[in-house]
Image 1 (cartoon, helix red, strand yellow):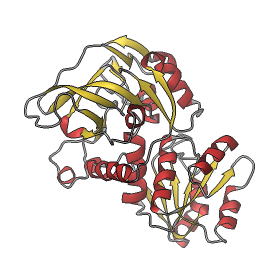
Image 2 (cartoon, helix red, strand yellow):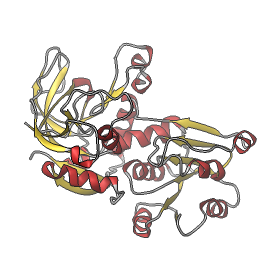
Image 3 (cartoon, rainbow, N blue to C red):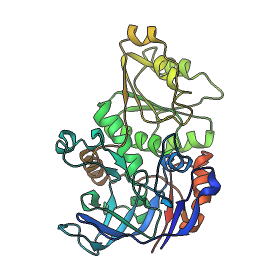
Image 4 (cartoon, rainbow, N blue to C red):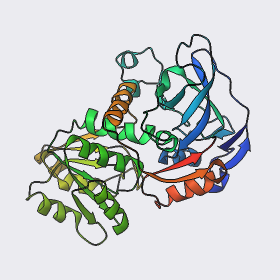
Length: 344
């Protein structure tokens, strides 16, 4: 079968469309014919490799997918052959205290499709049957195929970790990526007042079309002063950060006393400076967050279905153009999610 895979870690040129062995369904697994798969920044980190990274090569990238079940393994009651499903990309042991309580992302053995096992940028993929959920009926294949990782990450950040409430103020840095846009959608869904930043006026305009209440070009204005003016000197209740080192000091300066900071990414670096005096004096709460649990995913899918929410799809490219798609994401050229159309 054809897949977008790497045979070594490195720059964009190591990503190749290759012939790889087609998977079979082990006990408790199903095999999917992949229709559409979404790109995430995780794909970049996996491609580049990290110190100590060890993967069986060739390694297929990709975490998001919608597919049709074409085979089932032993002990699988659901889904059935022929069903169209979206994939929850989290992987865990299934037996520890956290897995048994529905908090798979706290499992000591937690991993993600495309990171710890072959991913979804392939014509066929094997996944645990428990990770398959019915596609929300109002979504196209392209929309469903890019939904999982970014939206469940944003859901966990806002709903589970920060526990956002209607009427609160939410600051989102760097609007344009999947998690940031999903957070904007969920923030408006729950009735928050949302402030967003970008260096692109076009992205800010599109964010306002999605419901952003206040926008700023951070290259032209001072974000901290703008937040203070916008909130009457109070500061925001929550700062949501998928950027990292460049915005971490802004988070601390922009949240109100007793405010919350929730972080899921480090695209600008992993070491941010912290003003500890401001941190303790203002009684701030800082939270790390990652991919949501299976329960987060179930709740997110239900909210998406009830509210008829649709992911923002920036572009849809064929599998053969996987490298072009990743380059667009890596240079922050997109507004929303980029999808690979793999099968009809």
